[in-house]
Image (cartoon, rainbow, N blue to C red; front, top):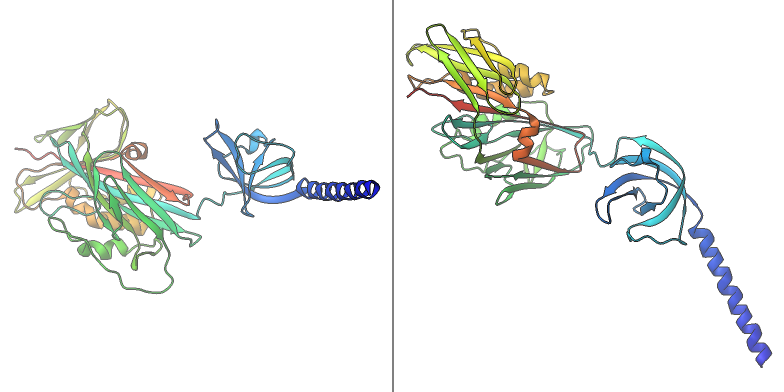
Length: 380
């Protein structure tokens, strides 16, 4: 009986050893996969591989060359079940061969172009950011256009670092200092647009809807509303540090930039005569560096200041024309005041992003954001 028990134990030991070795052979066999290198900040920070097969791989020997967040790769390696990691993330793999495949899959195959205007008076600290011109006092918000090569849905969250959003289109989920569109898609079938925005005090969005939509950006759909743009408005503190002193006798203006950053496409506009028969005057400086002042002669020359600027920044001709059609008369003309002067300039994208952030999922391959500041310098 003891001999039988001994043989039985040997038999089970053989079976267990065989199964374990078979498992190890499979577990530690060579694999060939594609995936995306991702950086994770926990556990001191590390790079992992999000496999296209849905498996997370924790490489023990990823070369420095391939330690790039969102890098698309193809790799060959061996699963190491004989090792443990304190990160407790993914399957440990030892890479034997690796190559870069190109653009990361998290880039959603689309580009973002945003333009907008902040409006305030020279003594104001509260500005409104807008895409539509004033009717009575203030306005608000930018317009976002999308150009996509891959028609996949995306999410967008807008966050005001200070201040708050006030209006959105299509109506989005707004809480405190954020507004969010989830699952914005690219429609295939034609659907009628709906306008559900309270536009009291402002030029109704319906009045400029045709102009905003008359572009070659991709059509978007959110909660059954279709348009060629996303729209949000808000208010936030902003201190203008650009001054303009006008010598009316010589038609000369001195503009000084007191910011610690350069400003671009700086336009000064005013008029002569009276509001019944005005002569509109303007001038432009391409850039004024921090601490710099520049003297310019105003004239009646009609220049597409903003269309040219936007095209240089990558906007399409139709998008730049849309902006000019909506804003040029507000920037350069005024029919109800005897004493008015406007100063318009573009701040760097890096400064805009300190005030308002856009968070996309998946990430766009390019984001171009333009914000002009309109300051009323009306004489008392």
